[in-house]
Length: 339
Image 1: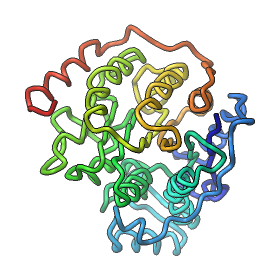
Image 2 (image 1 turned 90 degrees about the vertical axis):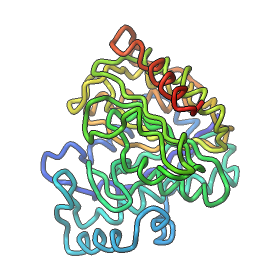
Image 3 (image 1 turned 135 degrees about the vertical axis):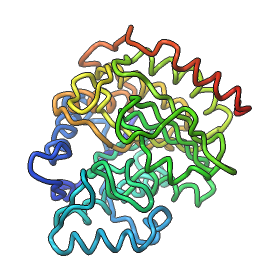
Image 4 (image 1 turned 90 degrees about the horizontal axis):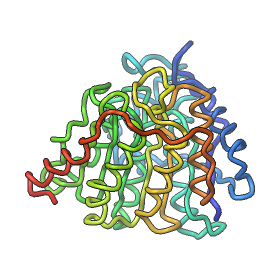
């Protein structure tokens, strides 16, 4: 089993500021993880390309994009309280979104017979709404890829297991029945969105599923949600493509969050998610993760799972709070006539 692996040195040129947690060393940790997993024989390098303006504008209006590009051209500056750009950020951001697009094109060509693609990108994207940067995010990378696929008539399932709710991805598709957005995240936590009551609107009602988990929730609580309500909703939606927003900040060592996952949990979560879309129609895109050692171990475990191997640097976790969350979410959905 082979996996396309996309990354680019330009991602290192995005500098969010001195001592900022979203730093270039994060990418280096993921690359180290790819070596630790002993899967080099199964990884096929993939060169990202820049997302075009037309592709970006499926999600972000031109005025928003113009503002960011111009600021980067002037040498950079602050976009919001948490998000800054440098001269190299526009190039990095368009290549980050473009990595997913290049992965789609390569998988559609059947390149190397790959079953999936892993995009080691930065800056991350899932907090960037169509009209607002936030939470270290500039371009909504996963949303750009999902919108591209939806425009081709595909049914796209996005699973976001970053500890922070992906409000930007959710906003992009909140009324869109072509894209199922599923988020498992810590609650409460920044950005304050992701309530179980957020289920989509209009034609998109029932295509947003939020699983808000308490601080300390362990891997067995994630798996219970995946094997329960998420599996049920996925089966009804019947996706043709799967995109994973792979934020590794739900790891118990992460300094910005309070969830209780280990790298072994990410291996099992990834293996479970792969069953929801056909081989060759699965993409993993990096989001958060701010403890470098945890990021290295978790990305290694994930990559191994993508190629059908087992690499668990830490044992999976169990016994944390949130025992009834999955059942409570299912009960709410049933009460809203969404199942």
